[in-house]
Length: 375
Ligand SMILES: [Ca+2]
Image (cartoon, rainbow, N blue to C red; front, side, top):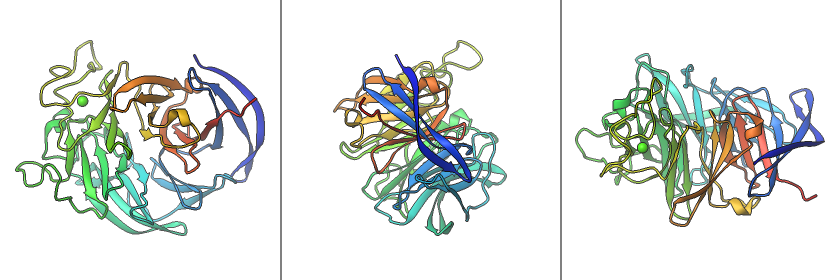
């Protein structure tokens, strides 16, 4: 029930030297009032990650292997140097970017490196000096190489308690999901300096890697922490149907590929042995058909008070902004699909310091959502 009306062009934004009119589009949402969408930049690559600097500029990672700063007032883009040799291609390349007030000045970055000529997901961190990344540290070069260019995972989240989490997909080889001797198909938990926390669930267990926090994941590309309830949320791509939102618990098994709500791409055949099983976690929400989530954000801002405590994800295949309303116990009680009429593959979703919602699209645009002005 979305309808659209393009309204007045308000003001000018400058993208490089070229002046472009900022087109404000009103989107009326079915049960949440309406939002305005403003384009802040265009012509970028696939912006996989975004993070706000203290000075208000937005740092962007492009999967093609580039970091840039976007001045939100002028639209000016500045290239950042100092990246390592990134393995691009397929779903790989430069991935997420995140920071935490617990480690001031550090930017956490996921990317794909070549190890023995195979792509592996890496978590690194670096500082920003001027327009250069410095003090580069690889915190974990995962053991996850396969011959495919699929399912790198790569999202980063912090819990505000001294830990960083990041995801790796099954790397296109299903048995990796249940194999604790590979990081593929898992979510890892590290100290902010990369050390392994002494209370990680698989510490000292034979045949398991100590960085693993949870496993049985297919391709988690969304990770978000709810500090109020102390909940780590994840979403992941199912095979054909069966995308999931999961509540992540220490040491838990999320089932892939033994369990799935999806079907094989090649026919109407269920993937796995079933949908639920004892000893394996069931998703909080399943999407059939798949929306293909590219991100996950837990909203806490003031700009959209009705959306506080909701999960947002960008949908790639079904091209919309997905909003899920959670109740206090963490159950998904409602879902809304916003911005579908834009027909954009929405990749990253971030909450700005202003409480507004920022999106990237695979068409290379950065968009900002704000409440529609009263008329
Ligand atoms: Ca699962």
